[in-house]
Length: 119
Image (cartoon, rainbow, N blue to C red; front, side, top):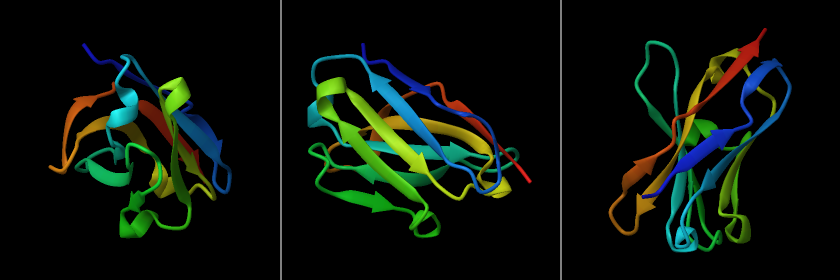
């Protein structure tokens, strides 16, 4: 059974930065693409960024380009999301997910970590 555990969220002032982490259980973490999503109050979940199994390729939602950086450390079974210049509209629960290679689908999700940005 795969478990994904996010951490690093919290309350931060606008303009600040956060680095979210997602630690994965299991020995096969390094062969799967990973992604981050977020869901703001009253809104649908939206894609933020994804990273290939090796980390050599990254993908971002158009609205996330520039302030968000996804990365991974396969030796630590961890994927990261660095968010800079935080804005109140970044307030959301952030989820990591494991990708199913070649499908665009995701089969395991974490419980999420809350990010709240005050103005």
